[in-house]
Length: 315
Ligand code: NAD
Ligand code: AKB
Image 1 (cartoon, rainbow, N blue to C red):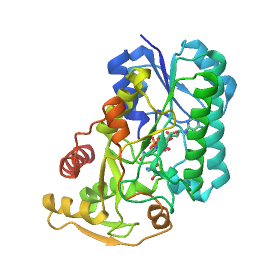
Image 2: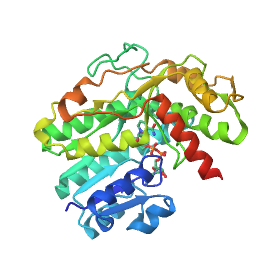
Image 3: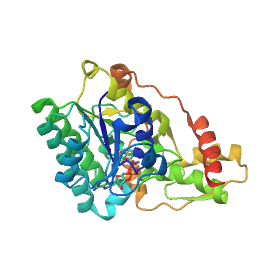
Image 4: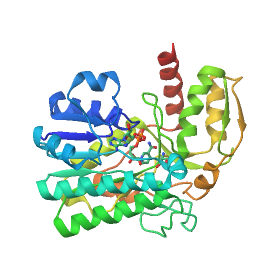
């Protein structure tokens, strides 16, 4: 059984991915790590290490201590936060990737996962059904770092044969851990505020369509990609994954089916410009063909689950 290190296990994706990997690979074979503590179930069900991914020596010693075969490198600064500290975001997003790539090369690790994002696209990209291969001129520091990262992972595969796999995640929606400072975070916050106050003030305009995905579908896609035979992979940059496209108005209407008095108001901020530069919908036919991507949740099923789970969580 391969031994796996997840870097960024306290975040929105990591906190759920670790638990799913532990089901498949065994609790002790999946080491969680982050600069801050992870949720209780992650901390208590298997090994956890406090790690700053930029600390090469510490990372090296954790990989050797646990005889790690695979790394899922999730630590990053997301689009909204990155715009307030561009150089810090560039350092964390890029330097950490280079540290992990070099470690994989020198220690001959078996496999890496590193997530990209729909943020690799920009204002000149076709916005409807955005193809796998198209114009990519991102104008956010987060998007620039993700596009550069995609080029680097493909380079390490071509030059050194490192088996790195990647998904361009759309906005991810989940109820376990709060979203980490992105432009798509409204689609998580809206469900919390619906339960807490029956009202929400949205930082994007009502008709802003963006691609999104419910976390169980994203976790399944990630593990499916990592477990597919390498021969199935026709590209070594990052795969488009579409999920479901909707606007703030669509989610509000869906919530109103459960809570007819729910009200939404709109006060767009700087994140509107970021959202305007991203695709409205994505063509993920290459991922479907290469490794059998599927998704289960539509807006209706996802909204019902978000509302019931958050209601239970908040008591
Ligand atoms: P998040 O912000 O919720 O979690 C990131 C985690 O990384 C945090 O727990 C943070 O403490 C940790 N971290 C930050 N700096 C670190 C450091 N120096 N050393 C160790 N850990 C550090 O992010 P997320 O939503 O879980 O996203 C994970 C990855 O997926 C990121 O690369 C992100 O760009 C990508 N992604 C996420 C989404 C989404 O909607 N959540 C969409 C597209 C891509
Ligand atoms: C963000 O909004 O920054 C992320 C992403 C789509 O990469 N959710």
